[in-house]
Image (cartoon, rainbow, N blue to C red; front, side, top):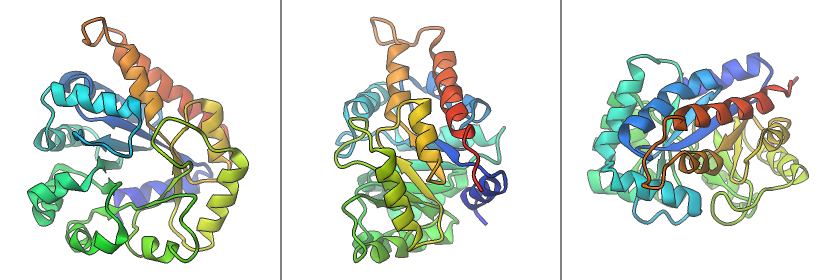
Length: 275
């Protein structure tokens, strides 16, 4: 049983939804980014998505694009991202970490090598937003061999005919992209989230996480009433940006400010009791 599966089992036993927090590896610099990563579990993050900076993040909105550019400027690489996870695992062997990004980074290294090195570092899952199920056979066998879950994305436009193809390759949980378009721009209504989550659950026993557009504790609570996890990314990356000085350097209160926002989001999610 993977860390991801164990975490969702615990959340179910605790009768609540989880909070998944996205941060960009290396944003705004390696040391500050690691301090944020290290502090996320205590602040209330149940699972962590660690974004791999990439030069052409086509699914990401302005906030995450800017975070990726800051990280790349700071010299962040795939190897440095693996190293962040390795350092995190020295003190935390329980919190699931998923790498989120684009398949180009996997392809360049080779799927088998990428999966092996990710697993050795302590990675639990992949969310590769541009890897369709038709191409997943290139990655999935290596991910399975190394105990890594592949989380595939569904959207409002993923109809009942398309869903089985996506779910065939999904493991850990299913990520529902609640709005059409890029990250961090608009938010779905609670009614829409309820309807789409119910439809997904008719097709799969996997937990369902809902992301894109969640920015406030109230929105996180609304998602938690229906889904198994609320995923927050752009709001946290924006909070990193707000903690930079005029030269783009981290101010002394940046880490604490980010973690305070995560704590507030966690409070929203945990205010909802399930079952």
